Length: 124
Figure (spheres, rainbow, N blue to C red):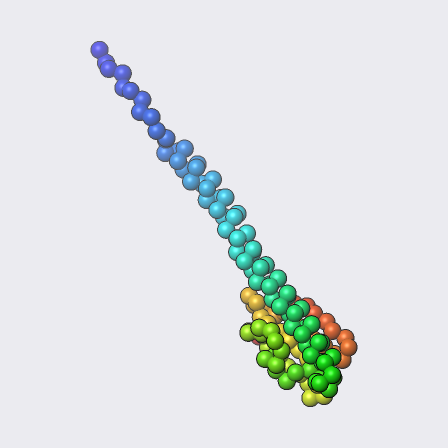
């Protein structure tokens, strides 16, 4: 008489391949989303910092002891301006502040009383 072979418990090769494929597809969807979250956080942090810098610049100019002029450097303000670029024109009526985040430049520009903000791909 032939002995019947006991069927061993376990997964077949096909079942394992399907599970690995599903995990791979899910990872391909989730991993890029995590990268975007970090980039969005950096961009939002930069925008918030630029807004604070803008407020500090305008307050500095309004201070009577500053003769209605912007500071010569961001270090004259009581803020952390590490990584930001700043320039003021010769007449001290306009300023520009910008920072590059992940290949995108975010900036504030002042043209007398007109202030604009925005972001776009850097031109370098």
